[in-house]
Image (cartoon, rainbow, N blue to C red; front, side):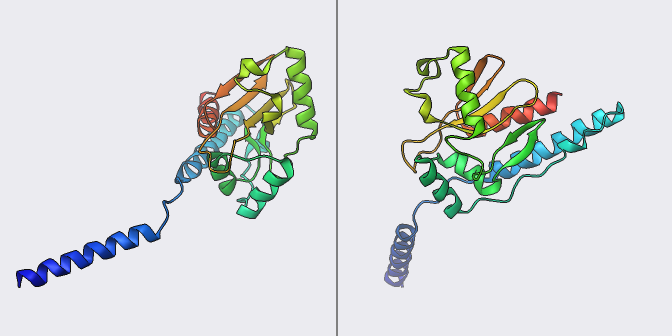
Length: 203
């Protein structure tokens, strides 16, 4: 009886090992994106209600993100731009492909709006030149590594740029915002979004 029990345990262990090897490791969870979208939506509504109580109609800020980008959409954009996006930014795109007024008057562009020669990209180049930034100040080798993925041209110019990834398996890359003659560097896209949530909540 003891022999039968031992044999069954060995078979079960072997089966489990084979099953584990048959499935590749799962990609990092994108649940943070769902949480962030919910937080941004609540913060938008709270700011709207606050302004409404003061007689200000800011209904324009009650927006929803664009639908998710498909893997084909992402790959097509990377090919068109001649670059790679990091996995964290791609997670966000799989939940929200663009979001007008996602944080106040600031927009996140859809993949169809992102281009090397877009008006926003050219304006950011002018902004960088006028501020006399150098790539070394940003910790990059060339400004060509930056891809403008959002911003606002109302009032003070504001640009959001992701740093291109060296390959398609890179987990995360820095994000930069440019405004008021200065820039801010965030370690990754998730951190950038979290800071935007906090900024909305503080208004």
